[in-house]
Length: 610
Image (tube, rainbow, N blue to C red; front, side, top):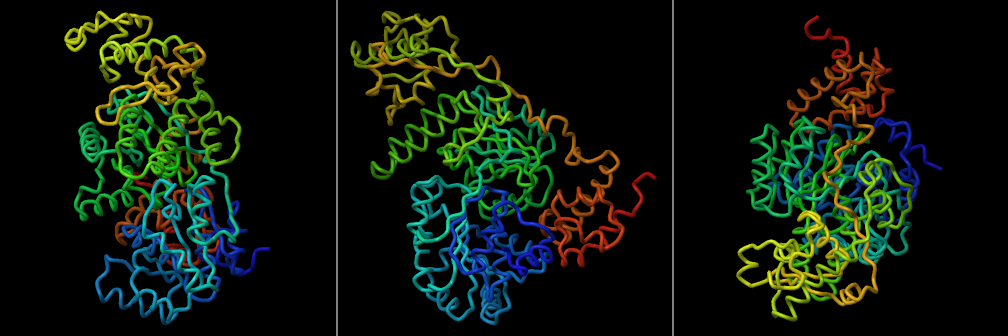
C-alpha cells in the first residue's frame, strides 16, 4: 500500500492525484529501502520513481546522470516545483561547486545530480561520505551495457556504490533494454537481487512509418510540410556533413532548423539545444549525440534519414516524440546504400569478433523491423520480449504491404555475382549488378565486356528501384554480403541453397509510392489545441502566450512552467479561484503560489480585438 507521505508529495509538489501505471509499486519499494532496476519507456514517468523517494526518505537523493548539458534545466524544473535541487559538474566554477557542496553536507538539498566521471574523484567520494544520502538513482542505466547501444565506460565503476554504501538503496532506470541488456545492467551494477520492474514498451500515440529512400531530402520536406508544419521535431542523420546539409535545406525551404553534432563548438551546441527546448516549432537536425534526457514534451515527430544501427537505439530516439501522449510520428527513410554502409562499418570496424557479431545481430534485428510485412508495433514489442496486437496505427497496418515469391529474382542476382566471380574473377557493387540485369550498356558494362555475360538483360521484368529493393532485402536476409573495403557484393553460405532452388525467398513488395497517411488521431490536428472544444482554443493560445513570455523572462523551457496537458485542462475547466486551479493536474503547491494569480488574470483578460 502506498505510503501517505508519497501520495502527499505527489499531490503537493507535483500536482497529481494518482500515480501512473507501475509508478506506485516502484516508489513504495524504494521508499522502503529496496534496490530496483526499472525499465520504463520515455515519457512513462521514470523521474518520479526516484524523485518522490528522495523527498520522502531522510537525506539527499543522488542522481547519477551522463547528461551534463541538461542538468541545469533538470534542476530548474525541480526548483520551480519547490524542490531543493542542485548539481555538480565540470560546467561550474569553484565558488558554485563550493556552495552546492556546503548545501549537501548541511542537509539543504533534496536532490543532487552528478556526472558519473565525478565519482572517479576521491574528493567526491569523501563529500558523499560526509552527507546523508537517501538513495542513489542511476539514470540512463543502459550506458553500463556493452551489449546496449550507448555504452559509456564511466558507468562501469558504479558497481562500487553498493560496496561503499551498502545500506543506501539504489534504483537504476532506462527506457530501452532487451533481456540481454537488462541482465548485463544487473550484473555490472550488482543489482541481481534487486526487484526488476518492467513496464510496457508500447507507445500507442506514436505512429511508426518506414519507407524506401528515394530522395530523402524531398521525402522529409513533404512530411514536414504536409503533416508537421510548425511542429517541433528531431531529424537524425549518421554523419555531421549530412546534418549540416539537411539543416540548411530545411531552412532554405521555410522550415526553421538548426544543426547539432559533436563537430560544432560547445557554445553553438549549447545554444541550439537551448533554443530547441525553449522555442516552439523548432527542428533540430542531429547526429545521435543529441537527445538523451531531452524532456521536451511536445516533440511531434522524430525522423531518421539513415538506418539506425539497432532497434534499441531506434526505439529510444523515436521515444523522444510525443512524451505528452499526443499523436506523434516516427518516420524513417532507408535504402540499399544504408544497408551496404552499415555492413561495411561493422565488418571493417574496430573491436573483437564478438563485438562485431553483436553489432551485426543488432543490425539484423533493425533490418527485420524495416522489412516486416506485419505490424511494426508488434515487431518492436516482440524485440523487447513483450507481446501485442496489431495496432492499426503504423504504416503496415494502415497500408498493408504485399509479400511476393522473389526466389527467381534472387537467383538472377546471385547468378550475376557468381558468374562475375568464377568467369572473370571480378566483384562489383549493387549498381553495376543491377545494370547487367536490366541490360544497360553503361560505360562500365562496356569497359568490362559484361554485356556478353549470360545473365545480361535477364531482369527486364523489374524496374531499377525494384531491383534495388531485391538486393537490399537479400542483404537483410543474409543471402548476400558486402565486402568491407570496397562495398562489392559477395555470396554467403546460404546463397547456394537459393541457387539450387532448395530455399524459397519471400520479400516485401516495393510500393509504387510510399504511404503518407497520417496517424488517425492526428489527421485533423490543425493546431496543438485541436482536441479542445472550439471555445477553449483561444483560451489555450492565450495561456501558451503567457507561458512563453514567462519562460523567456525566467530563462527556462516553457514546459518547466506548465505542460500543454495542464494548460489544456485549465482552458477547459476555466477555474475561477486559486482553490479550483489547485485541483488541475500538474498544478502543485509551489506552482500555484508562483503562477496562480497570473493564470487567473490571463483567463479573465479579454481576447485581443474585442
